[in-house]
Length: 362
Image 1 (cartoon, helix red, strand yellow):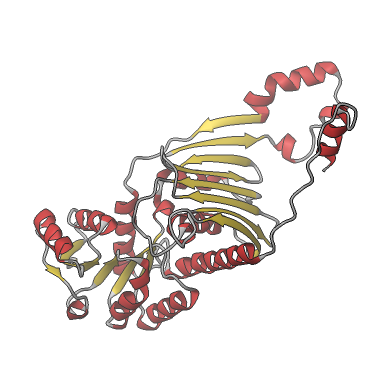
Image 2: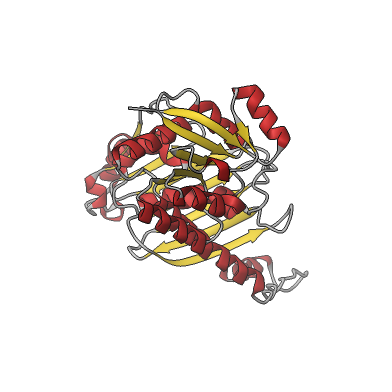
């Protein structure tokens, strides 16, 4: 079978990574790197020996597939042009900056019967994949994603820049509908949010708490999933996964510490960590997630199957992100909360014990 002639749109940080990997994969033939910046094109030509172009339209009928790694603002227009020309499209996350734009791209891909894949790369993280067999029936999801400010993706805030990864991961493991969103944020380096805290409630009772910041000194990508029979602790940076297995006697309510006598409690204490809450460090395969997602893109094109992260998946992530952004607007617009009264301690009233009690009650 002939190789997939592929264009890369965007010669920035991610565009360079995709270009480098595409040149190593036998499924693809790199046709062109497209970027309006002359300096970026010159760098791509020198580093990869790539043909370059300032415009994407002359290439619409010359390639089989495209990788869109441009700023989010341009995802919709450029991807739509390629899809309408019958070109398969891989679009870096987020799919688009708005729900309406994402819906249009999904509809266009369906009408043209072309593959539309979204670059939610964490779905290919081997630590996450190792956890999947153990997290049936999720009850609680917690995600923490922090990084230094990268001076990229400044056209969007932390929700679409960072948290979108964890939105997609959460939607991929919770087979339910989001029914309630709470969110708060801070903007430190511009008009977009840089720190975000979100609480999602699903109609099956699952709760997800997502925290993201792009103004930290270090990098953290961590996920916890409490399921029916286990707790998964996933370090997406280190690519390690620990599973705490809940003994069926715990989940079925057979253990009641309050009803135990002292010898029974001592026996439970001795066996709790090794038998009732047994931990297991999973074997995690070594792989490059971006390479894996591009290989998945190639297989979807050649076999006609749905990609692991489809356009519909990308659309759902954008929909939830849009609800979070709306919740953030309401958080900013709501009236300032009344400050809580301060309890002053004097030599006679209120006494420290009384003041502590009032504080705890408040």
